Length: 167
Image (cartoon, rainbow, N blue to C red):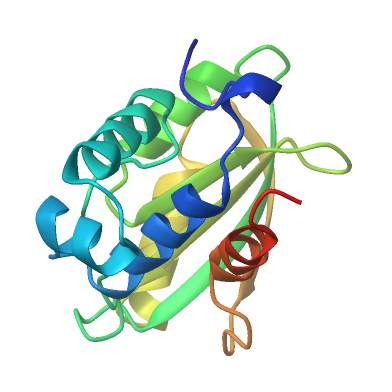
């Protein structure tokens, strides 16, 4: 099964959710400590982590980085309209722009939704200039994020699953 494919027979259960919550809170915990805190065998924790890695649910253990603290205090979003049939080419060119953090194919007015970061307004102009220089980009509309009242999260979903205990 490819990453992000889900089957009913491989749905996450409450123990998986509790393990993911534990690793979200303390990503440096070892398998043995996780098993101790969850009250299950070390092999159970290892098997579940291996399965979640294989399925793409757990995608590694990177540190949680604050882009603003790294000097990229400006976040902007752009809706791009692109030449038909060129999504893969545009995505590859956008991936080559370091400040482009994510790109989503969308429905509606635009074709791609892009999150980018910059150090200042002048730096954002440079990043936008790089984006619009992609030959297949036909039109853009950019908005600057003023704040992030709800940051990216999965915790509420995990907490609901962890509390379900097989319901």
